[in-house]
Image (cartoon, rainbow, N blue to C red):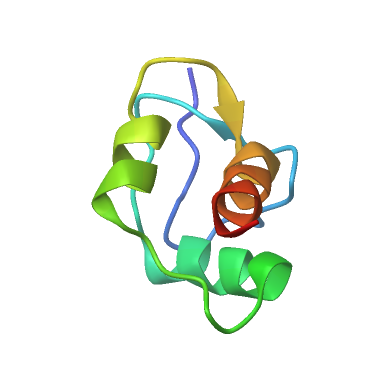
Length: 69
């Protein structure tokens, strides 16, 4: 099984967040591009990401925007 390179891999909204997920500058850049310059990780969002449910990076962007609603 090949693991995704969270530091340098090409991220898209369809990129699957799995057990190898890392909160890297690459991820932050992508999510800032999706959510705007105010994007930031907080404890609640990180807990949601790590909840064990299946997510994509697009789901994270959508959830962040929903929480800022």
